[in-house]
Structure formats: structure tokens, C-alpha cells
Image 1: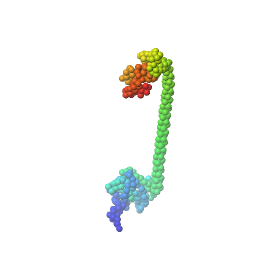
Image 2: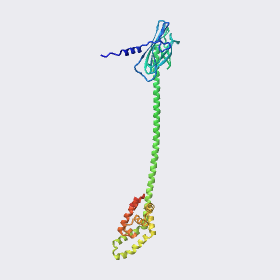
Image 3: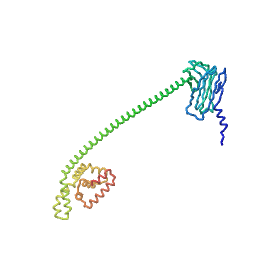
Image 4: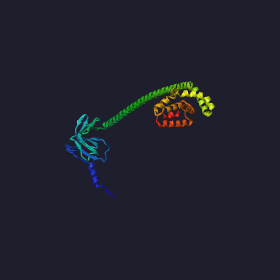
Length: 363
């Protein structure tokens, strides 16, 4: 069986009931003409709040013999305090205690803890108590007052409740106003954002529609231009090239016959000489550039290492002549034609020209 610590019980009893004097020190207990000021205090084990508070609670008022005794409690949290004086207003008359009273509650034992002080003070005898009677304490934390009548206590409770209610109502109204203001701001921002988005989308739509219209016009214009150019080329070289291609093919098929050579020689020679001279090649190159968006000019600019013969060979290819026709114009064998075209493709691909794939695709 374990017994409680006796020293702890004794210390607790000493802390819970202390009667001290209140002259110039913290506790008062002197008699003067039968008047007595009594102070006791209790140290609480835990602090109930983090704020420094000093709360007065009225307990009792009564007449004893030739004096009026008032009993009240003071609850202090976290820090010491000082009471400079106590006054009691009775029927509009300000009374002081029969024995002067002041209290200094200091020390490490109180610092950072909660304490409850029970104070009993004697005042001059009063024949009547009134609803407006108030006990006033002047402290280092300000003036604390508390009604000393039940009606006054009730009225003060009502006033406190009304004050708390009005404070809470004001807080609610402020919160509501803030909420409505925030909602209004959010709605306005949403409307503004919606308008801005609508304007941006509309502008983009208009711009895209304009681009599409311009692109459509460009396609139509390009198509018309291509048809024009195709018609021009057909008019200039269509019949000549078709006849020449036919003669070249026939010549290739029957080039072993002396009789055929003699019969075709004059026609072939006439067309070949017409397309071999530099003027005809230049004219053909201009048409190819016009029809294929300046492809020969681009080849000259991007691959300057190509020879004039290479450019001439490419011009015939881009003009659409058959391999046999190109062989006749350039005076090479058909086997050499394919070898030369293959080597030329490799050179173009290895050149690193920006449009090299386009150049090769048209060969």
C-alpha cells in the first residue's frame, strides 16, 4: 500500500489558504476600529489562457455590525499584478475601505501561472444597497469594475451578452460585406476575363478567317497562273517536243537501219539543233523557272559547284524530256544517262542545299 506525500499535502494547504496583511506589502490583514481586510489565494495547476487576464468576480455583500463587508474574487493568468486602490460607489457616494488597501502580487511562484485571489474588504456601513452600486479596482492593468447588486450583476451580464452579440453581429456583417465584396470582385474579374477572352477569340477567328480567305485567293491565283503557264508552254513547245520525242524514240528503235537514218536524219537534226543552241536552252530554262517556281535559279544559287553541263542536263530533266530525248540533246548513251543522273542526284543530296530534296524529286 502506497501513502501520499505528506510534504506535498502541507504545501498545497499552505498555498490554498494564506492570510496576509495589506499595508505596503502584497497581503493585508490589520485591524483598525474593528475593520478587517482579508486576502487569501490559490495557485492553480494549469494556465487556462495564453493571454494576461485579470478578472473580478463579485461574491457577496452584507452588513456586519457597524460596517459593510464586500467579498469578491480576482483571477489572474500568466503574470503578476498590482492593485493600487479599491473604491465602492453606493447610491452615488464614493467610499473607500475602512482600512486602506493595496495589493502587490509578485514573485516567481505566480509568474507564468494562474492564481485565484479571495478578497474580503470592510467599507462604511450602508443603510441601503442600490442597483447602480459598483466596486472599482484601480490596477496596473487598468480600472476593473463590478456591480455589487444582483440586479446590477444581471444587468451587467445582459450588457456583456448584448456587447458580445453586437460584436459578433458586427463581425458577421463585416464578414458578409467582405464576402459580398470578394464575390463582386470575383464576378467582375470573371466578366472582364470573359470579355477579354471573347475579344481575343473573336480577333483570332477574324484573323484566321482572313488568312484562310487570303490563302484561298492565293491558291486560286496560283492555280490560274499554273494553268496559264502550262498553256503557254504547251503552245510554245508542246507540238515540237511531242514530235521530237516521237522521232527520238523511233530513231533509237531503228538506229541500225541506214535507210531509216537517212529518212529521219533531216527532221531529227532540225529539232535537235533548235533545242541544242544556247538561245533555245536559255529560253527553255526561263520557262522551267517560271513553271517550277525558279527551280533552276535555286540550283545555281544553292549549288554553285555544278557545271554548265550539269545545269543544262537538269534543265532538260525539269522540262520533262524523256531519257532518250535527253541523250540525243546531250549526245550521250542511254547507259551513261542513268549513271550521270544517279551521280548528279548524289552530289545534290551531299551538297547540303536547303532545297536539295526538291531538286532531286523533280529529276
